[in-house]
Image (cartoon, rainbow, N blue to C red):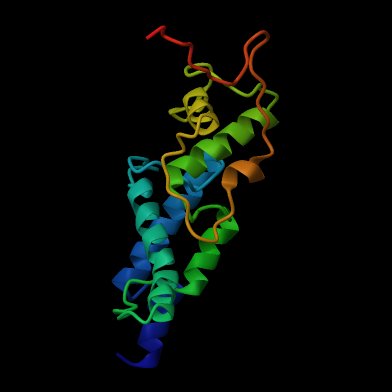
Amino acid sequence: MDKVRIEQPEKLGMVWSHQDVAWEEGTAAARGWAEQNGHLLAPLDATHQGYRVGTWLKNQRTAARKPAEIEQRRAEGLPMGSSAGALPEDRREQLDETDPSWPPAWPADWQRAFHLVRLHLKAGGELPIEPGIAVHQGENLGQWVKSVRFGGSGRKSVKGEANPVSACAVRTRPPQGRGCARTRQPTGR
C-alpha cells in the first residue's frame, strides 16, 4: 500500500500490530479497573468489562521484572538468555502513571492487602487486628494484618529490598489487657 492509503486508516485509529492492539486493550481495561478500585494490584481473577485484567497485569509484572533478572544474571556471570518478552520502558511508564505501585518486588497480593489497609485507615477506619473485621475488594484485611504482625508475611526477603512493613508506619496495639508476647507455661514434666 502507498503512504496515503496507510495514513488514512491510521487517522481513523487503525493499529497495524496485533501486539499493539493487545496492549491498548489491556491498558484500557487496567485503567478502567484502577478507576473503580483505586489501584492496579488486581487479583488474578479480576475482570473489567469482560477483559481478564488480573491475568493481563500479572503478565505485565512478569515482563517488567525480566530486565532486572537479565542484569542480575549478567552480574553473576551466568547465561542471560533472551530479552524477548521484556516490558519496554515506555509501556512500563504508562502503567506507572496509573499506579506507581503496580509492579512490587514482593507478591502483588501482599501489596494489594497493604494498599487496602492504608485506604481503610485513610477513610477513618481502625486497623483491623482480627480476621473478618474488615473485608474490602474480597481481601480479609484483619487476616492480613494478623499474618504480618506475627511474622507470617508469606514471602522470603529479597537481598537489598526495603521492608514494606516498616515503611507502612502502621502501629498496632493489642486490645486492652492483652499483651503481644506469647509465653509458654511450664507443663510440669
